[in-house]
Length: 379
Image 1 (cartoon, rainbow, N blue to C red):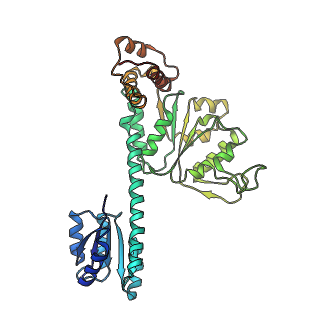
Image 2: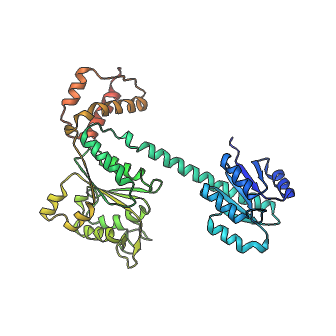
């Protein structure tokens, strides 16, 4: 079982010994008598928590805190101080200290604050672990693309993922992997760990689209939720909103979406109080928005606002060099999921797979491989 490491920074030998006696049953304890010693120790030894006295010989606790956080701004530091130094504690908290204790120390309070701080640390590590897992799952290396068209698309994904909130339009036929690309943008960006909210604009009743997107206030609808409902835009705050089949969005919702994209503000349906959120919008369509604009079914100003970065995913029939790598990728996936042991493809199978039209694109290919591997037992 992992034992947390706590560094005590205090020049009082009696306090050092007392804290070591109290805490060493549960934690590994390290001691530094000065700020300089603490900073030097932290260069070579990772710790989970620092108990830092404000009054130290040499550089004081505030300067030591500054040096510690410059090296690792995520490290949890609990300040220890006398009553007359409370003003200095306020300064340390503004600088990034996690909490503080007042001397003479109350042992029960000390243990509670340490446990609370380490719970925070555990949650941070779990979140960071989930972020790494999501980044790995949606890493560009996991998106199969040997063809020139897909390599171009993936290069655009890498570039736009570095931006904070640039709007993205993904175009491609049904089944080409538009949502996979949208998730890759989200999980490779600084928004990883925040919500990725998806909505299919063509799968929602025209009467409900606006309330699904923007939410509604209580009393707006007969039969609606008593306290109202938050919309998908608000639920995606600090994350990404994926609008699939954006071409199906009704005109009134197009107007409200345009206003939102301009200033990230909106009114819930039936509401009079404006709300502001921080959301990256990623839209996708299997139809040409330019043609929709020409027909008058899609607003031209919204099209230009959505089309800041446009990523085109070519159909599978135009990137046949991707077919066999995709087949092998899904073969490996379904070997694990179905407990099978398929090892390769015959020449006849390769030829048939490459020459098939794949009207349903990657989705059809995936379903085909899954069906074969479920129904057959071979290598």
